Image 1 (cartoon, rainbow, N blue to C red):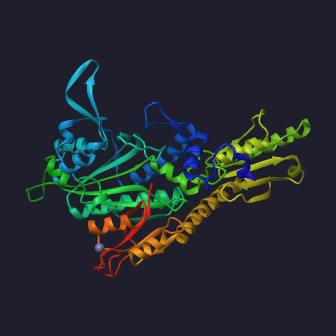
Image 2: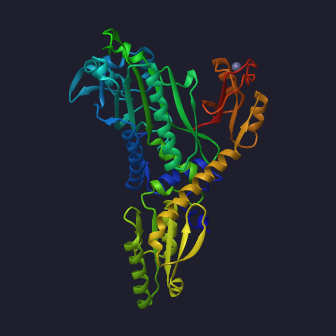
Image 3: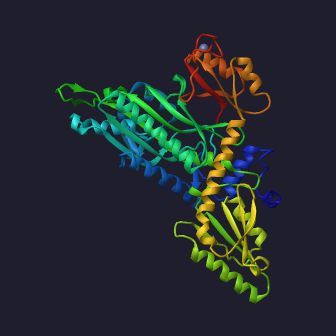
Length: 483
Ligand SMILES: [Zn+2]
């Protein structure tokens, strides 16, 4: 069995999910701990996975009319301090630079935890007229936030992300932008990473510091826990007022523009690992897999056969379309079984085994990583069929993740229902909710480590009584344990 072979390298997923996760990240050579606590080194295979994900999202960001630019890493303290809620929200997480060389700085510099403050400060000089709007920009960068408890990819003191920032003439246009970008995140999660998500609005206590409201997508991990995979914020005029951004409208009256920001980070790689991984390690959806197909020759001592097998491998290499990422594993010092385990652990979607026995019939053996399905197929024309085979795997992985989400989603009407829903295993519970802070506390207190993920945008409560206070509720809350 696949699991048994690589079982020596990683902890059992069903017995110790947390250790399994860290083992997969490290043994599959995605990332490792860095000397500074909470920081990580992203290794080439992990970085290639991030690059695929990043490129897909970058294309969507550009498709929806945004341009990339770059702001500096360091932000003067006085800039950060202008929006009161924002500075209060981020104060516990900011890293400060107090010295340049041997000289004490006159003003402390923050290492950006996010860039609204410096972007607003600059755009205050650049936005003058209604003709300057909308501003639609994005930057790919690193940010740093002090974290007490860290976990590779999921929560690190420094991480990579994109942060989009936009300014608009009207409230409605800003609201539409917030929706558009959340939908890009949904598209990335569902169509590229094969992770179905639930869209909704964060509660008051969970929204971005300084925002009017925050939307999120929430994905289910294979242990039934939730992962917030992207957020999009309507900032209204909170920052543009605090930072003095004004423009003259068509009637020559001075106005503060409406603003949005939205971000998605390397955290989503952690989500991909936990959503699809199994006892043998990573399982990567084909669209983002750095290597989509690995070809393993089964060669023995007979030179004659070795040459024939190698020629078959080369033929596959030659015949695959240029956009299929294929690797022939010709390493001589490794046995085929070791190679299988090596690529299984790394989650390569399809493996082709080329052996003498199959070749006599003109065939090779093909194995799908996500479900282990094994088929003997003709070598003739294989290259041309690989793309449709990868597309099939992509769709089947998403369908399987959707199946898990459906199977572990329950509707609840009361706090007792909620407690009952969590007695056997973690689930996604949905129930009517009034969106008051007291009721959020009551929900959290009813089940260990439970949180309200979001107020679902796809469901309506029809005035049913709130799970906690029994008053008529406006929303349906998604309640789950979360990473
Ligand atoms: Zn309530």
